[in-house]
Amino acid sequence: MRKKVLAGVLATVMTFSMAACGDTGVASNSSAKSGDDSSENGGDPYTVTLVLQGSTQPDEERIEKKINEILEPELNANLDIVVLPWASATQQLQLMLSGDEKIDLFYTNAANAIQYMHSGQIIDMSELIDQYGTNMKSIYGEDIVKTNNVDGFVYGLPNQIERGSIPAVFMRKDLVEKYNINTDDIKEPKDMEKVFEIVQNGEPDMTMLYSTSEGDTPLGRLFRGDGLGDASFGVIMDQTNSTKVENYFATDWFKDTATMLHDWYKKGYISQDAGTNTENWRTVCKAGNLFSIFFSYHPGTPVEFESSTGYEFEIVPFYDEPIVNSSSYGGVIFSLAQNSENPEKAMQVLDYIYGSPEVMNLLNWGEEGIDYVVEDEENEIINYPDGITADNVGYSLNLGWELPNQFIAYKWSGSDPQLWDKMQDFNASAKNSKAVGFAFDNSEYTNQIAALTNIVKQYNGALCSGSGDPEELIPQLLKELEDAGINDVIAARQKQLDEFLANK
Picture 1: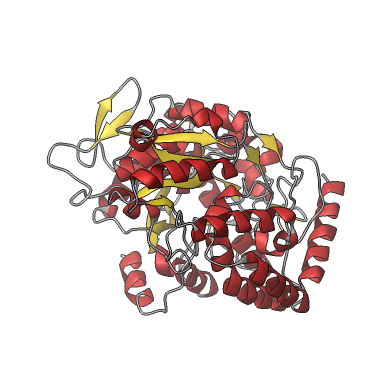
Picture 2: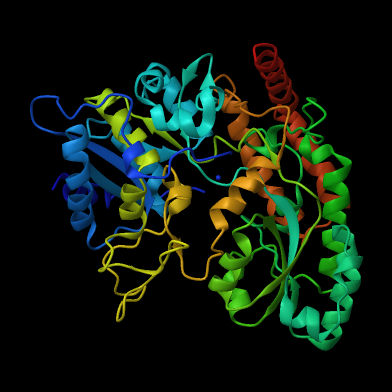
C-alpha cells in the first residue's frame, strides 16, 4: 500500500519535534450522513487520505477495511489512515504537502495551518462547510464552525474536545490525608508553601512540586491570560475584560510568579535539576517521588491522572470557571490539503466522522471483540478483551482528542460514566476571552519571530521552572527581546486583533 511506501521514504528524514461546546448534536449513525448523500455517485470509490500523529497500529489495515464497509455504501468513499510519528510529524507532513503525495485531510493547529495557507498548501473550507457540513454545523453552530479563518479563508475545523481549563494544584490524596492538609486553606498558588513545608518535613526525599524546563512548566500551567497562540510574543492578561496586548515577560504577574517559584526552588520544594529536567511528571509520580503538580483541570483529568500514575489526587482549582480563549478552537483542527484530488468527497467523509459513533470508535479503539469489549453497555465504557493488553493489542490509537468528535465515542475503563456530559457542561460554563477565534498572521514577521524565539529559548526554561533568578534574568531577557523587535510584533498583534474585533 501507498502508506507503507511513504513510511519507508520518510523514515530517512531528520526528526523535528512538535508539540481541545455545547451539545454534540449527533448521537447515532442514522444522523451521521453528510450534507450530500453521495452514495449514488458513479465510478470507483474515492480514497480519502487522513493523516494523524501518534503511533502506527499493527492492524491498521484491518480497521480501515471495517471503516470502509461503512463509508463505501454511504458515501462511495474509502479511508486511508496515515499515522506520522510524533517526533518527525511536522517535517513529514510538510514533505507531503510540498510534494505530490496523496493527502486529503490532516490534523494540525491554527499556527501551522496559517503558514500552510500562505504557502498555498491548503484549501479554503468555507463553501465546502456550507455544502457538506451538516454534522459540523449541528455541533458548533454557524459561527463557531468557521471560527478558524483569516479574512474569510477557513483554514481548519475544530475538534470536539474540552474548550477551557482551570489552573489547579493536583496533590497526592494519600499524602494530603496523611498530613491532615486542610485544602480549604488553599486559595491561590502561594498558599502551597505552607503545605510543602508540612509534607517535606515528613517526606524529605520527595519532590514537592513537579517542574521542568519545557512543556508542563509550573509557571506556564498557572497562566490565566490569553496567549493569542503563543504567549512569547504578546498576551492579553485580563482576557475576559480587556483587549490590550502586552509583553508577557514584562508583566507583574510573570515576575511575581517566577519569583515565587525561584524561592521554592531555593527551599528545595522544586527539584534541583528542574532547569534541565525533561522527564515526564507521570514517570516521577509513578516512582513515588512526587507530591504535587500545577496542571489544568477539566472533568477528565482526575481519572486520567489516576490511571496513568496509580495514585488518586486531591485537586484544588484556583478559579471558579474555565475560560475559552483564542486557541480553544484552533489548538486541534483538521485542514484540507491543496493536494486533495476530491475536496468535496474529503469534506463529506470528515463530516460523516463528526456524526458517526461507529466510525469514531473504530478510529480510536479498533474493532469490538478483538481490540476491546464493552464492559458497561449502559455507560458505554470499554476495556481490553481477556488476554489483550496495551502491549499486544492490534489497534488502539487512544487519541480521542485528536479525532473529530470524541464526545460520541466510547470511554475507557475507569472513566467517569458521565464524562462527556460533564465535559459539555464544563464547556458551557466557560467564560469567553475577548479574542476567541483570533489567530495572528505572522507571515510578515517571520524573521523577527525567529529571532525572538531563539532568545526566549535561552531564558524560558530557567524562569518558568523556578531554577533561574528573575532579578537577574528578566532584565536581560527584556533588553534582548526589545532589541530583536518584540514591540513591533506586539503592535502588529494589537492591530490585527483590533481589526478582527471590528469585523466580528
